[in-house]
Length: 157
Image 1 (cartoon, rainbow, N blue to C red):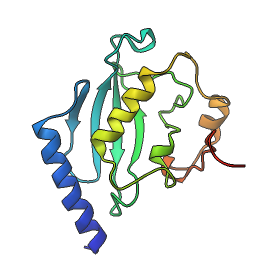
Image 2 (cartoon, rainbow, N blue to C red):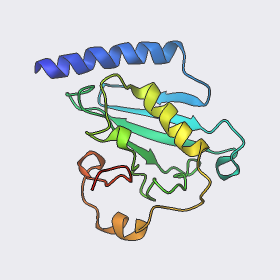
Image 3 (cartoon, one colour):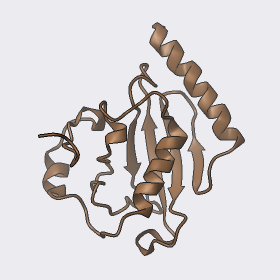
Image 4 (cartoon, rainbow, N blue to C red):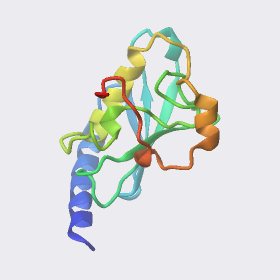
């Protein structure tokens, strides 16, 4: 096993132990059977009418370079778990959030902080819409989420 993989396993083991002990309100661990893929559910806790009474499923995929590299995080559609409608969430579950990209990621982040950031992103949303070009993006995209080079509004031109 490469040294990075050992470090990722050690880090994920510590995160999993902490998650089993306590998670912030509105975040629930669904499964973490290995150190490659975890599923968590999140709920928006405020009174945002766009997400009232909804629970959303997140899939985290970890590489052997975690936490140096961000995990791949997407929303997963299930019969009782829709993909939230948000200007930064594509209808296939891909999330446009700088925190999840190479430029915005920091190894101090973790599964819990990503879930909390996504809760916050949903809490602050007032627009019941998908990102511009959602249909074309979903139809044409063949890249893994971590390989997509999103342009963020705060990027310098």
